[in-house]
Length: 197
Length: 197
Image 1 (spheres, rainbow over the protein chains, first blue to last red):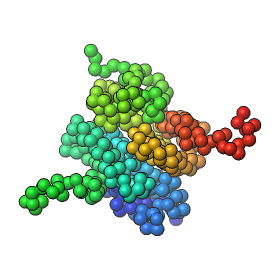
Image 2: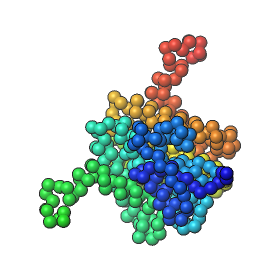
Image 3: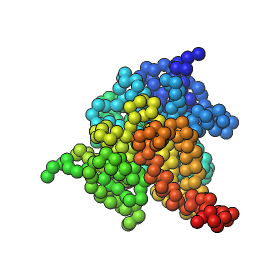
Image 4: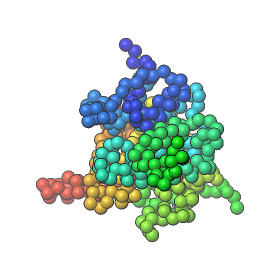
């Protein structure tokens, strides 16, 4: 048995942190296997003793690659970029690279940790929507302002970068968030019926 | 007036995110000026209109350098590493680089956002200690496990890296956190008086 084989991604289908790594693997055309970790089944398979050995943070994703297990999604993205330079997801220019990282970091440390499942459970059923909305709004206002200076066709310039890998999953996830769905123009009492068609 | 002068760090003395950037600037011997932003005065100077133009996330640090303003502390650390390679703070080996980023990311996205000032205000006076302790304990257990595999003299191997820049400030900050101070062996009712001397 070879230690180094096809990379294995520990992933949950709905997790936006897993999603961003899947996008990068796909863009770089790196074949990989998925090992699903259900964040829901049996109180969360990420809390099992077996998975805690994979990722002591008890979160997805984790990537087994090149004989090592890597955790933390932004770290995984940068590892892929450093070791698989095909289809680059970072610009060459230092300032542009910095602008990509700013967007990734705001999502990964300013938005995501405050609205992920384990935190919402801790905040409690009653307050969780208001809580999530508060932090998401703050983060996205900042991202919007940064994008107004950096964006071309994509988040930073005209090429897809790691910033897009991070932004798209969380944007799509938010579309389905109850607080955001309820606030959508088409769900307002004064929205004319013809506008929802 | 030249646009490009000495870097200016928007910083608050107690902020662990500012602190990690100060360590890197000092290790790399980059002269810089500090522009203090009090997170306490006048409801927090980081929320002023003037500062929101510097950092739309309304947080410290921000670094004005090379004619640009950079935000998000890990991004700033990596920018300094990319543009000021003297006194490297990242290893060459890809796996070791990844281990440095893992520790940085766990601190920056797994611990820091859940226990910083603005979140604790939102959690409320009554619950804030229990809340902070919960997330910090989870993050530090994971870091401890990662360090047991990666550490030499420092977090990753025998050279100071960005992981140490991130770990030391938060470790020192925690020493003074009421929940951690109260839980310290020397503050236990069954601690023998001779042990506290």
